[in-house]
Length: 269
Image (cartoon, rainbow, N blue to C red; front, side, top):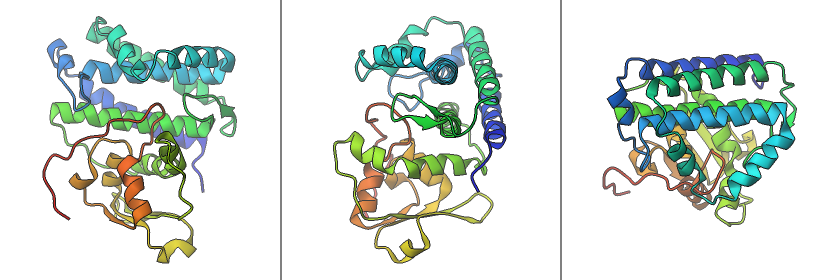
């Protein structure tokens, strides 16, 4: 059964707290630490989340105004996210943290009153309101991972990873199209080990014998589809040409094709 909007918002708030707890003890100098995202500091990860929280709320309250803003942003080229980061580099950390908190609180309050099935515009394909919140949770987790990596923090995997994994699976066609490749008709079965020891699966029961599968820890799958780890640095077992191609270009987030991450070590398979 799909989660309710209330459940999604609760999980988003909980994921937000994880990020906030990492940020709260930081002095101003720590906000300038580089993260694994090339050219981005911790402050840039936070301004990115705050900025797109505001635009996500706008997509629900004033879709026409959002579309106009999205069109203007697209006109800035593929580096628009870097340019947004540049625009807020002078903002003091205390103000940046408060912006993130305020934008996130407003987002949650806005979507609490939105029908989860309502279609909303976005920078990629339009999404339901429920999918929009799932995407914000995914973004929070992914950029939180960048912050955690910069600080050397090991985060405990939670059941909230299911939302990240789900949007990773749902963006299968999007990822191929983003790279100008035809969407394969071959189904890919996904079987992931959840943090609590259960198994999460995507794909029909008829796909259990398919030659194309992705199996392994849910955390590793989420790291790959959000482009926070290279496939070779994970414990995922990928079988079949289509599954392998997908994992090489998987992208759970909207926007132009991401650069991904280089493997941290040489692995022979």
